[in-house]
Length: 372
Image (tube, rainbow, N blue to C red; front, side, top):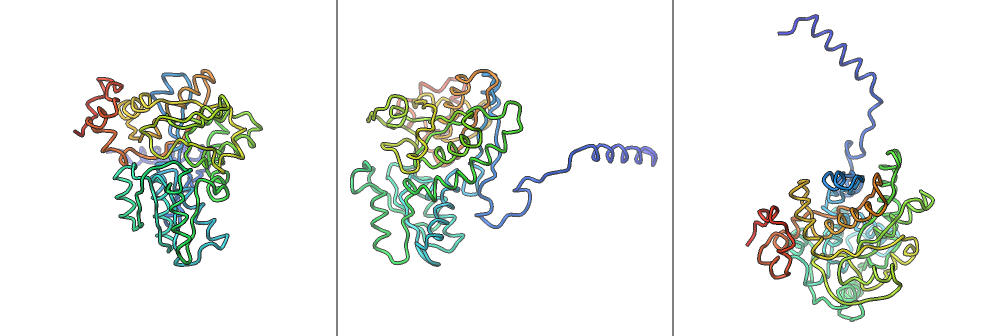
């Protein structure tokens, strides 16, 4: 047992050490926040250790899966509902209607429940059952419809618009082309957060890259980072197979065809969210599905990070961009959501074989394929 004198000396040492430390600055979420909406944003940056060590670069992911609804789309959901309120398009007790591949719908279902609105979602019937089930559990009215091109009047977005027009006190929030509600929220939140999290690090931030579905995250973050850094931060698009954006940005052509295992990213057109900022982009990187599936398993095995395909694609692209920018560069991407929303596909041997992707998962990672 320590003597009284020894205890006093230990206490004095601790007190001196505490006095030498800078004042504690609490993280915004270490203090109470106001409900679901208050918990959106202020997500940490996660250093992807295995890839950072491998490349000699700093590859960081904005942990958007830590938003209360589980994805980056919580931000857009809040922005879209606030837009509907502020423009007078919805009154208390009304209905928010949207076409979404899943995560925006999940965010909207949460925000609507928190703010007293009903929620109706139209989505392609190609989306995972986990997403559809979760939307219904959250109280949303869900309409899975055949996946057809945007030009087709039966596209899920157009069906959502018509549904809202049939209702009283309802708003179609139009996430793909509502720059004020979607792109705007990333100019005022995601972009400033990334900049403030990296501006005091040695060398600051060199690059930002992510995939895009609506265009809101990429456009809003790009606009903020380009203006704040006076153009020094390079901003790039990551693109899955089947999307036309990589060809449009790199070669000025629209090349259609193919598909991808990713959900909610890739586009067949330039959305109104993306149009104001597409000229600011420094380039685009196409990521094939075989690289995406390999990265899903790499991140789980080597870093303990359990992510879906869209996030894995972003990380592949972030690694490639960091290598382009050179050793010591620092690149941020978006960690969109977790794999639990896609696990019955991504970790199923039967599904992987049906997509001819099993052969791209290294043998030392195949023990992670736990579903038949």
